Amino acid sequence: MISLAEHERLAASVCFSRELDDQVVAALADGDVLADERWRVYREMIRSRFRKVVQAALPRTTSVLGDRFEARFAAWLDEAPPDTRFFREVPVGFAHHVEAWLASPEAADLPTFTADLARYEIARWGVLAAPDDEPAQELSFERPPKLTRSLALLDVTHAVHAKKKGPPKAGVAHLAIYRAPKDDAFEAVTLELNELARDLLRAWSDPSETPLVARVQAVTQARGTAIDERFLEGLGALLEDLLRRGVVLGSR
Amino acid sequence: MSPTGVGLGLRAAMAREFLAQLPDEVAFVEVHPENYVGRGGLYRRNLDRARDRYPVLTHGLTLGFGSTEPFDRAFLADVRAFLDSVNAPWHSDHLCFGGAGDAFVHDLLPIPFTEESVKTAARRITEMRDALDRPVAFENLSYYVPLAKDPLDEARFCVEVAERADCAIMLDVNNVFVNSRNFGFDPRRWIDLVPAHRVVQMHVAGHLVRPDGLRIDTHGEPVPDGVYELLDYTLRKLGPRPVLLERDNDIPSLDELLAEVRRLSAVYAAATSADVSRPEPGSASAFAHVEAAK
Image (cartoon, rainbow over all chains, first blue to last red; front, side, top):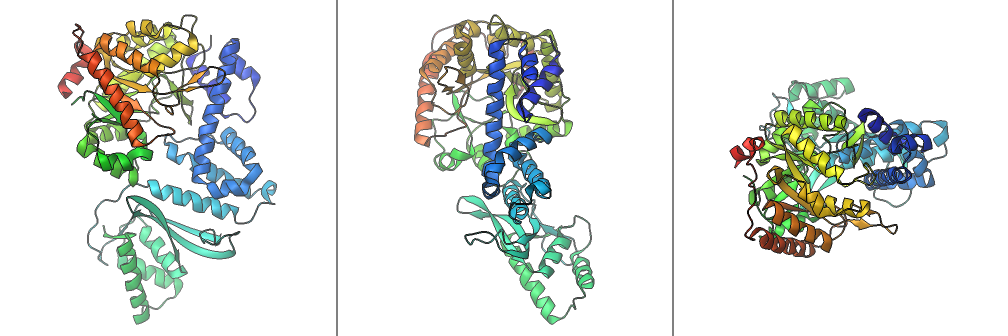
């Protein structure tokens, strides 16, 4: 009789391996024909659940993968099976796997926007489940800013966020994705930022204790942007909008 | 405080309608900590609303007692904080394993009914009880792989784990029923082997019958008559315990769910009002925690 640890290792192998190894199933089933058959049932059930949640999180990406999805799905489970206990995070692993694979020659014929699409879809999936925010203090330039924990900043080279039908057009875009209440639920909202706003939000997202004013100065210095009346007007409008949206919550 | 009566699993697909109505038929709700730890948004808001109205019981999905992997201590600490936040009187998880190494199968895989499995489960239950600082119960599994010549060995295995760990049992009546049909035994004989004083809660659900006859515990069908009958038998035998209706897939309208809750409540009322002498839950030393929590 095999040890409990070996039982578990073999069962995981039955569930995750790309090609089912009859010898592994036989070892697990200890020669019992019915057990052999039933371990295969587990394999199908488990893979079916993973497939469903991946397709729910990444509907457009899996659609672009088309008939190559199944091979990618099988490769992912074989090479990097889910290492999270949170079922909601399972698709993140698949998205990372696809993103890495898209850089390989094997994926050269897939549309160039596919990696952006996977990153965009998984970011939207993630913000919906992000932890809630703690209360913030009133915004002060002398204190570090506090941003919503649901914020995801993403640079893309195709307009995967555009609501137009058809393939996303090429073009760099800087996106801020966050969770907002809608009716009796929540939705993931995408903002398109200019470069300056992207740099500011990135600087404000840093968990350090640097006050807001120093962060603004660092960004303007790095970009060679003058802090003049026009800039201050724009900064005020940006902060007002982000405070209204709950992206900037106040100060820490 | 331990609830009585029939409760409902709080699931995202039915939460909106459920929380708008807050139906009186439902005595408590049950939630999976894995769906809430580290998560905000809709799940958290739904839980907060439910908690204002109903007692909350907790049931885990990924800390299987049959696993040979060490517990993730950080996650256990998160679970404890979560249980404290909802005043969970106990916590249950499954007598199974859910992966190997770092990999999670996100399903409940069966362990062999061996001495090694008993020792492993008893050790983990004790460890979890210490970490969570409250009673811990294990749920008997529905499983599809034959693991013993005598299918009642599963019941004996469960009893041995409960005795060795001095812990509670979260008795899944549907699982006993499913196993009885898949492996050909009388489910009432299984129930007869369970020490009444160890059972703190019960689960019922529906299951799928495949064309080849194999029954799969999907929680995606209405509760079948056979499960109602076995619940009636179990409640008469063991006495009143909170009964949870689990529905996780193909969730129907709230009206349909509540109709099932009402039918279960009728079974509950009839079975627990019977003039039968039964052992009280918590009468064994193992349940000092339960008594203190009441």
